[in-house]
Length: 208
Ligand SMILES: *[C@@H]1O[C@H](CO)[C@@H](O)[C@H](O)[C@H]1NC(C)=O
Ligand SMILES: *[C@@H]1O[C@H](CO)[C@@H](O)[C@H](O)[C@H]1NC(C)=O
Ligand SMILES: *[C@@H]1O[C@H](CO)[C@@H](O)[C@H](O)[C@H]1NC(C)=O
Image 1 (cartoon, protein in one colour):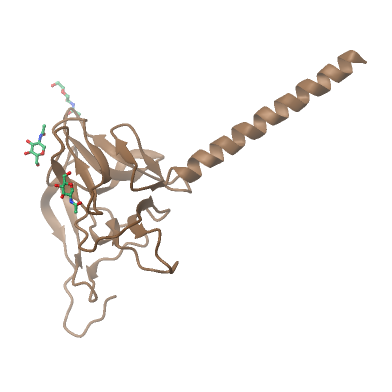
Image 2 (tube, helix red, strand yellow; image 1 turned 90 degrees about the vertical axis):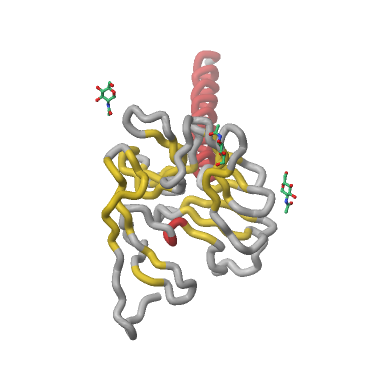
């Protein structure tokens, strides 16, 4: 009788432990695709898209000590789909990404020098950075009234060398931004190489 009770008790404890584990795991993966104004990401820390496909963080390649902020497939970290500071590598692994006080996402080096910036022209109050399931890093204003409000900035407007399913190439007639892919200099060097893929639009053709 006492043994039965004890066994029942143990089973209940095991169930509670399992539920806590699951809740914790889900909670973590939900929380980790978004970064708020007071948060930062250092080397070794990452954001992960909610469907666990993409990961954003700092990476190095080959024997190089230089590090870059990028997005890669979580299941294949060698497959980098976007690089932020490809023109301006960090000399070491001491980079950090955070919001500047003028509402831009910035990558800072060890001495707080700005290595890369999202270069937003508008000042936004309640900015968050989110890594979407599409593989795009977007900045949006959390206090914005409309859910459909366009993103203030998106990495898809600055493609590297990888074409993802919902990434567009060509000319954005609204913003004048030209989307094109530029190959890496070499397999271990994401700096812009010689090969550029630009879509030439004939006059009168329509793009978004
Ligand atoms: C790293 O450096 C070693 C020795 O210098 C060299 O043999 C090796 O090929 C390098 N590896 C890469 C990936 O560059
Ligand atoms: C941002 O911070 C710098 C240094 O901390 C300061 O000089 C500057 O005035 C600040 N800018 C704004 C818009 O708050
Ligand atoms: C940090 O970045 C600034 C500005 O780009 C640069 O002048 C400085 O040398 C860098 N410091 C280090 C330690 O890389």
